Length: 323
Image 1: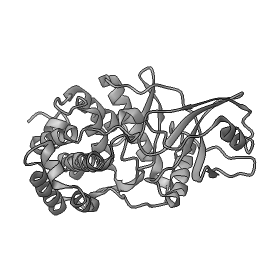
Image 2 (image 1 turned 180 degrees about the vertical axis):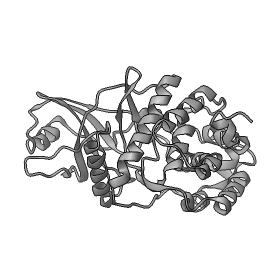
Image 3 (image 1 turned 90 degrees about the horizontal axis):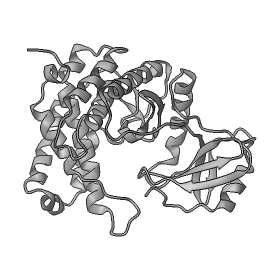
């Protein structure tokens, strides 16, 4: 559950008094997500998301997220806006945390996407990538390739071995291999890097919302696509590759942006990196999340299995090109 900080109806009503959005009607904690405390807040006029930023989000990064979403919204992308209060402030202090009132976007997240929906996600991601062309702000990726080895060194190797014998040595080798082979000159700009199915809202087969930009940063656009490919194109446990979903996602992206030859040739490598990134963050949380914590731990091996798949994959098969 994603509610770490309990917000009473009285505290929410006091916050809303700063805004011109109507009086509080209901307030409900949202269970999805692991980074922040989120509430569905309904007033007499509309619904909103109330977010309180917890320890994993640096308040210094919030202006970047705000400005990126404002840029994307202005460009016509289906992203939520931060709501200003009567004084023009979008960032608030609530119960000792930084907090924001955010536009609610209707729609549902799918757990078993169809190829049509996967293609729509790929197309929406490409449209987002085109829209950030005029966004000049930069933010390093705190979970980019340079972070993976240090993050692994903070994980207990014995705990990793208890999940799967040989896992620790394999991760160490993979960190070294990716460090030696990671590209340096691919197209780079603002990207999402966390566009999992629960961060996409559908209205039928159309994308109605792209949400949760708190891992947004400056990185390779093809890496962003690789993260999404790894997130969407497998069964939840990572045991089955859903080729029709993966191909539809890449084809949808290609309707808007044609990847360069270098991006296509390194795509499997980038997807290995994407798989390792989520394997490591899940492994760290698996080891360090105390019993009784509100966060449900996610299986690291689901992304280890994705990593194993991408090790033997090639660009031609992923993009549906016959040899």
